[in-house]
Image (cartoon, rainbow, N blue to C red; front, side, top):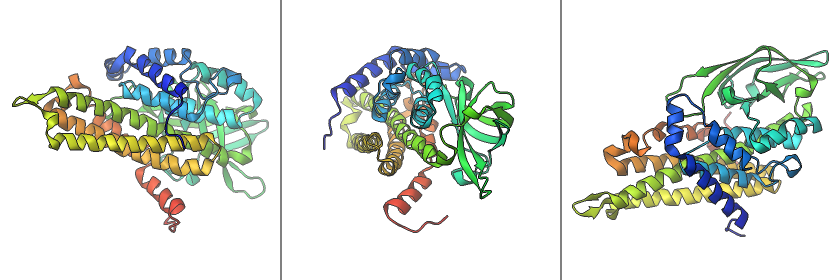
Length: 385
């Protein structure tokens, strides 16, 4: 087993970090506070091929794995320029289209994913379903050669920036009458498709939205892949989502830890750097250990996914997402504590992260649902729901 990343991935990390530093955390926060977008950073990352590293080469991508895309996500976050839509558009949506889309869908969407000119949101969460995807009520019905889609979604990221949304809905089985999941690509300018921003107490350039689908008429080719294979298609997208979510948290954890360590070295009280005191040194060291452990599990999850082991990747991806979220929360909290009052001053760039990292315990899957998964599938414990 090799614990060293390839020279290509190391170079990719370095180049991505350099790009992020070119813009810097100040750029990101300014855009977030003023309601702006990180279009300049996104577009440049796309032109350089960083957003499309995992798109198949025949469609203009790098032909690499989810591990390389996760490295890009992590490095951008680690220098203070996180791109949340990376977790959704190139990871979930491009992966699903690449693996299960028709030839026409691949030709239509994948080149745009490869160069960053296409952004696609992912809509699964509903007001009354939460984590229970079996209770999704957004329904697609056939009408001649078309599909008609109706329902609601909540907490959908980046819809205002997206060209289309990959919507998880349900269709009715003609033989059994039971509802089964199906995925549809819905352009955001389709009649009947509306979205409204959800006001959040998080300073982020990426906004959250509620979706309203009122008899949205779609052509037959809006259905992704096979109507009967949608559950497999759905989970093929959720594993990359968890891997990318872990990488996103890892990047923020590294950013906060670097800030805390630098301050602990520079700040002096009574002629001694505060980092010399074990009351600060040990908690920072503990965070470093947590970050490295979470990073290893994230890399394992990516390696399993890229090898085609979807079930093994599911277990590791859930664990990685859990570990990285906890590491990020601890990293930000300890860095703020190390800075004292300065930790909440805008100048130091940490205060806005306090609520942002808390999101990692909730999305894309809650900490409790991860523990349920591990209890049931890893430990063989009985299911409680």
